[in-house]
Amino acid sequence: SMNHKFFRFIIIGIINTLFGAGVYSLLIYLGISYAWALLISTILGILFNFKTTGIYVFDNHDNRLIFRFFTIYSIIYVINVLIVKFLIRYTDINAYISGYIAIPIVAILSFILQKKFVFKGRNK
Image (tube, rainbow, N blue to C red; front, side):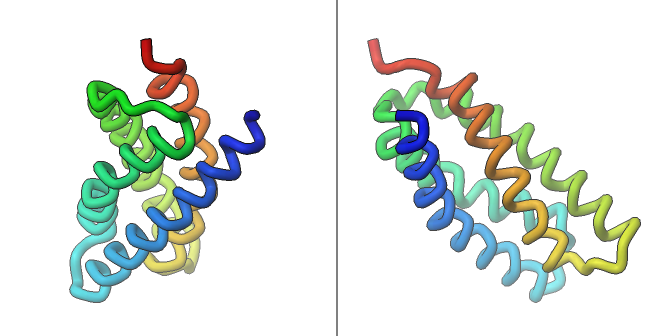
């Protein structure tokens, strides 16, 4: 069911998010800009997230979908950077908290886009 898929998506997403947020925080701590920190943490999470999301959320093992998955993640990355940039520029919120605020927005958008454009059907 859709609720079950979304629940599994959230669990897999939490695991991937903890990894990504940890990498992001480490890179910010090391003095790397938020845009590069987001890019690096996103790239490091893509392959793991592709396999776990494909298999455990959408029951799809098709490795050819990595290109669509990467395209959606590229779009999500740009949206993520824009949210963080906006928060840093127009509020008193720092790069750490801005990155964390963007997470739920990006997660919901990611589920919708992956369901609609990446894992839209079962394997043939």
